[in-house]
Length: 155
Image (cartoon, rainbow, N blue to C red; front, side, top):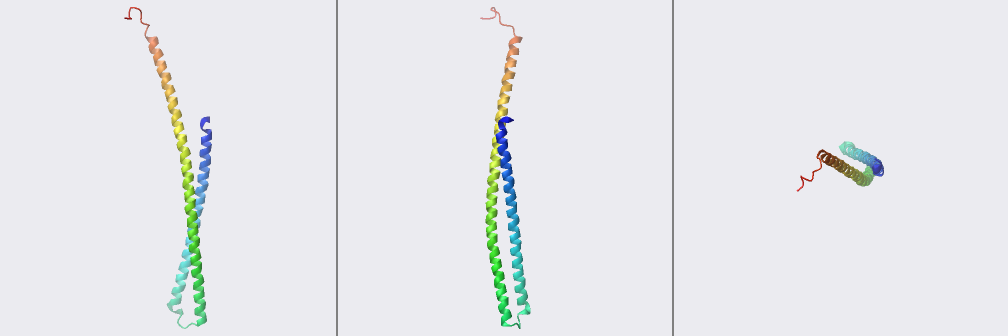
């Protein structure tokens, strides 16, 4: 209906914005998941390296080799710490994307509710018109079906 064209256009645009925000939210989730996997790999590698080192290889090693091992483990721990910071940032970005997505969904739902209420109001007006026309038709039919009262019938 032409009356609702602007509102339908607003709904279409809000739907497109919601869909774009949903794609951004999904991408943020994938990015966070990938970063978490990378952190898990770093942590597992660090734990495995420590386990191998403690498992018997460090018995008769030179001081220089032990020093290099500790430097390597320190750098590996720094990488883990940096990755944890990346994950915190990505989690915040995901939370922000989620909030924007919720706002877009809320806006779309609001437009849809307005359209629904306007359709209901229009339908109610049309039903009232139809009822009025039916009532008028019935009144006219009743009036035509009954001859006019004569003067004798009137008190």
